[in-house]
Amino acid sequence: MGRFSKIAVIYGSDSSEWEVSCRSGEFVASRIDGQEYDIYEIFARFGKWQLVACKKKDSMRITFPEGSRPEVDKTDFSVTVMGEKTKFDYAYIVQHGAPGENGLLQGYLEMLGVPFSSCGAYSSTIAFDKFACKSFIRNLGIVKCAPDVFVREGVDYKVDLKFPVFVKPTQGGSSFGVTMVKTAEELPSAIRFAFSEGSTVLVEQGISGRELTCAAYFDGEKVSALPLIEIVTENEYFDYDAKYNGHSSEICPAPVDDGVKTLVQDTTCKIYAALGCKGVVRMDYIMSGDGLYFLEVNTIPGMTSASLVPKMVRTAGMDMTTFLTAIIENS
Image (tube, rainbow, N blue to C red; front, side):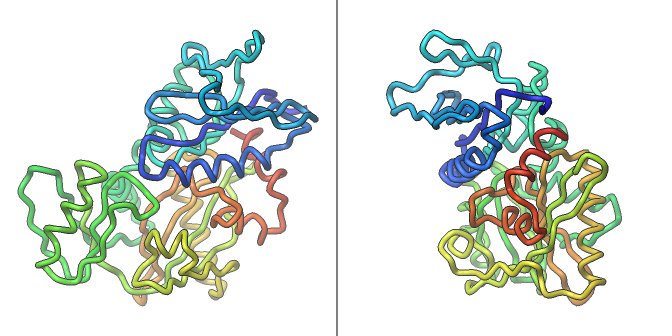
């Protein structure tokens, strides 16, 4: 018997990624062991938390139509259905973007003493901001980082980088607000576009090479890395269209030699440990001619059936339900 019994799967978010988050959350909820746990699906967006569906052990999944969904009581993280109050004893967070990926949701759960699946509030806050995270990783001295310029809205900036560059919001994912810029003339409009997702922007020098990604998790004894994936896109870079509209190939395991495989997996485990990560965390890289470059950390990686982490899990020969149980029980 596991440590927990009533699992709240929280999805949706306040960001542009909320629909992707719903797909991830629904997939996770469908793969959590329904013989071991009661599973409650919570849609959370702009402070409104509602029970979308629930499935008690060995029972059918019950859905609640929009307009009659029970509200979650945030004072004690519970829900009342037909007069029966249920207090959740664990949260599986599948919110891409704020507040589930930037530390706010984690802080709330930490104050209530409710265990959860992801990194803690402090680690999440650092990892979510691309500039803060790169600054942290750069100081570790274990992987290269591309030159960059930090831009805050309303503050003068100077970009002295080689083109092409990538302009991206410092907070956010799924390539929302990201532009590949080839000339200095295109830069101001790209920065304005990135500001549509937040008030701070990172202008990062482009690095040529192979795009690789790797995830790590705590298996109960040690931090373990999953198989690498190489991303080969039909587009100029791995943008939203390539990610979600089938314009890329995600090759797992990545066709790299043992030296590159070991380097990426070891680097991923070191970053995971240095950041104090929990749960499953994915890290993205570029393998260039002069070494391995860090791109970003994804503390709440995509978890649809077609997402990168489930592909890694399948390639590793693991069952998804067993993997999720390991994440839950080793949090």
